[in-house]
Length: 57
Image 1 (cartoon, rainbow, N blue to C red):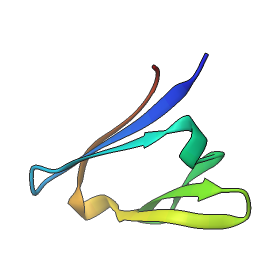
Image 2: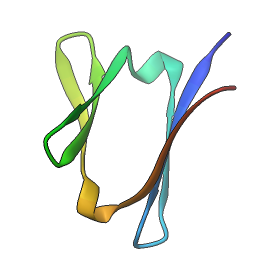
Image 3: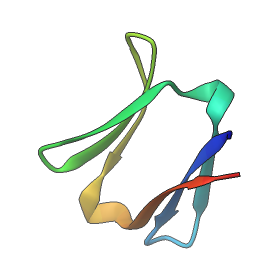
Image 4: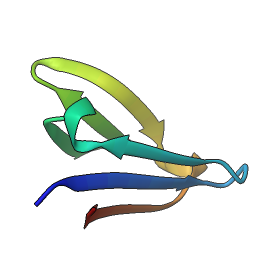
């Protein structure tokens, strides 16, 4: 099954990462990081996030 990451931000924006765009994710300190291989492709400060959901598409 293909998964997506949905990040809802306090400013009202919603970010959706499709499975082809990421390979892993991590919580590091006060940040949520989206990774693709060895590259960090998205970094979000927890102070700006309402929710992070990883779900099957």
